[in-house]
Image (cartoon, rainbow, N blue to C red; front, side):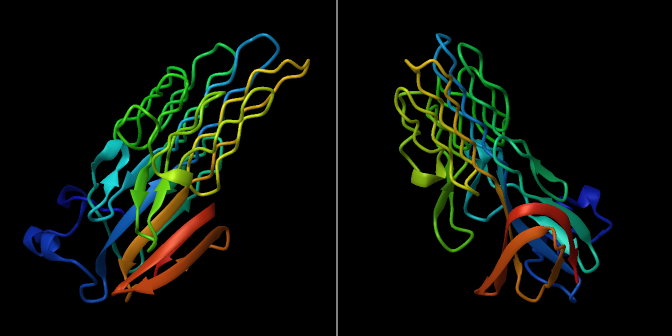
Length: 272
């Protein structure tokens, strides 16, 4: 599964391979994918030790035709599959879980720095100072976590593969900051103000969690949780998949393609 070049394939007719766009003889087809890891946790606050920084967005890789991949790079090559193939799908949980589709893996977002500490590295880096992975996300922007886009403000990326345009993979703000304003709820949720815990990111958007605000109270405040990731596959509608019970998924069909969206779990998928 996930053959992306002739160098890794047993198919020797390169011209035929490159011209295939759907099922050929019921055996060989291409899969477009969007793989998004879980967002990083927001930084905590403890007495007198500074406010929390925002978590970074989960690593983002996409081969969806006409869309961008992580770091606002060109879409990756489609994967190739045939009847009888099996592959693993894993949906990364919030707070930095790794997401996987076959050989395609995305790293969870870096946690935001707590107190006066540095943010962690990840698919996108946590604020302050966390480093992202080229092709998956960006570095932190000051106290704000990095995102899947290229701008230095934690922006995520839009995708319409599920039929509705959705923003995913954005970084969250540190204490006293909102998450970035572009791509809406695809970002880490808003950071709460002073004397409060950081806000948590929504499920399956891969956004970072907000940093905790400074507190005048004697007890610490916690950073918000990063949002869980997602895996989406688009493939010809003549293809059927057998999906393990450990995976939460749904499938829609439109215009000659099926789109299967995995929202949780890990398990094996077989091409029937």
